[in-house]
Length: 177
Ligand SMILES: [Cu+2]
Image 1 (cartoon, protein in one colour):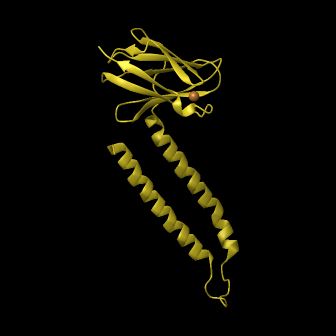
Image 2 (cartoon, protein in one colour):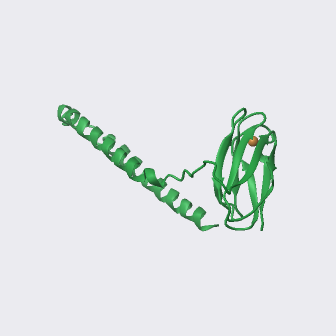
Image 3 (spheres, helix red, strand yellow):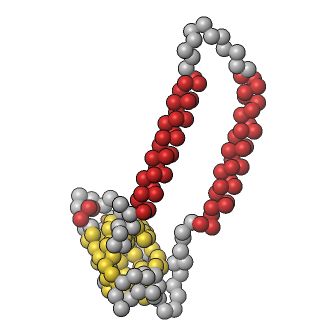
């Protein structure tokens, strides 16, 4: 298992356990085990607290959203001089990639489209780590720029369910000097 997958597994497990504890706690707090217990909760007072708590949640989400905005991995997909150009055509059920061999360390601008239905153009490295993905949409061209550092064979996979043979929609990119 590669380090990224292990990190995801640990984080996911931790969040799942935490969610289960919170769920149990909520369930316990809303179920009375004492049949004679009188309900003494001051609902008026609780209702007054709703607005501040709502605002608190909104402010927290806004801070979190703004603070992490800069880390969203949207690359610069604009055309620039010195780029390699690769055209990608997704179709049921194959990738037509031209040229299929590219050079490392020089940005590659992918021009991605589809011949029939939507496809997801995704490129994975040797360790099965997703490097990037972009939608392949009929009658429209999407662009993405990526620079391959390491020479080698990269696997192209379709990440958008596109029909009965979707799982066989596998291609390759060769990066070599
Ligand atoms: Cu597909």
